[in-house]
Length: 290
Image (cartoon, rainbow, N blue to C red):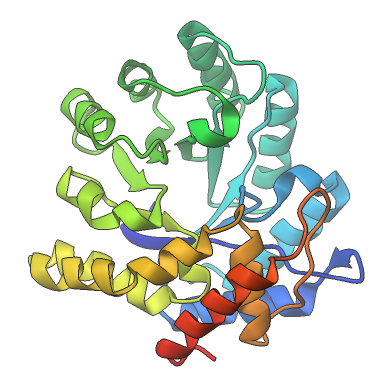
């Protein structure tokens, strides 16, 4: 699908509705600044609060605006396999290039359940699928052995790993075929995961620093590990502040300060607290982002 930095794109709202014009501005900003893929309707996109009709509008807007310049990867996960398949068919019919499929949350199924769920969704589509492991959100960790099983399914091409466990990433790399893609799901672990055999990042920080996140990946892939590490360290405080409250609260506040979107979220998410927001704004000013 891609190598380097793909953006986990926010979904802008205005007066409670999807803000199409702001979304198009964000997509143009991303493509102009070297982002390698648009990942829409994921965690950062507040997918769990978005209706089926709205999802159709969001996917269509992303596909049309990207216009095949970079791939559009759509989050289709659910804790219901039936609904995940329904989401998958919708995304495929609207022109998505690939899918992001999170582990079923809340149900906390067994490894056999994970494999059965992922396989059922994969069998419902011809699109390439990136699995998504984020135990801090879902309450279930996807172990390396599940990646090995799923790597044998033709259209399952990789995983977004957001467990934070580098040892687990290394074990995945040891087990799976060389062409099975591993993407960091944590912006503060891009270089460590690249060093563990990863292929890039699906990034929240790329919403505001897309060029810098791609530069970090490119430097590593071109053999300039020192430059990549220096970029990781340089932006670490900014990245930490982007996660000082629940994602996407801080990154939406940041984009609002950059005049790209309204600072609007859907309940149960609420706007960023003043104390953390002041720190975020100060760090953004240090990089001339505002």
